[in-house]
Image 1 (tube, rainbow, N blue to C red):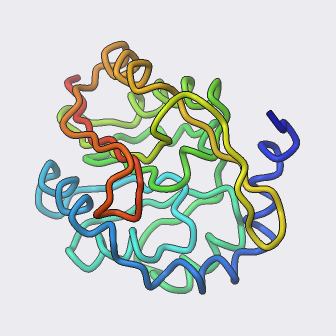
Image 2 (cartoon, rainbow, N blue to C red):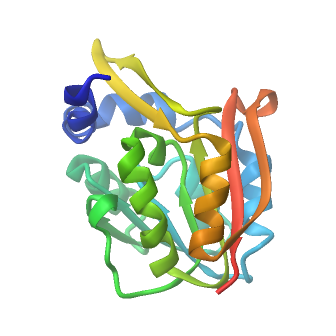
Length: 202
């Protein structure tokens, strides 16, 4: 599909960070899934939010429940909003595809961020998930319902999405030491999101 739109994701979120923040931060349909994720994490555990955006509503939800959040995003304006909004947490400008923090976390989440990567980059992310996961760490991310690419729009610009087939995600779980806990394709209770929840067995 359109390679240019895949390469322009970071630039798009850099240029439209404020607009995205205004549109995104007040939605709350993710709550049941976030609770399932937190149920796998020790009290006051450490969470890595990969593609954290401006910190609302996902990171905020964790912070309000006394979890420590390290957020990474390739958009510097998004990270600047996070630093102003939640100065007690850790925020870092980083491309998730190159992430190497030399730390391990109790939970890793890539909500509405992982699915902006190409399929090859998604495959490569599982080694990064593994590298940053403590034993029994929770992993949650959103994908598409099946193998393919799709182009949406945001502020009149192409917005790239991609997904592997469910069986390939499951194979990657096995390869990298994760076990599937729960998956729902196009969950009607979560704005049609396809969500994966897994736990690291390492």
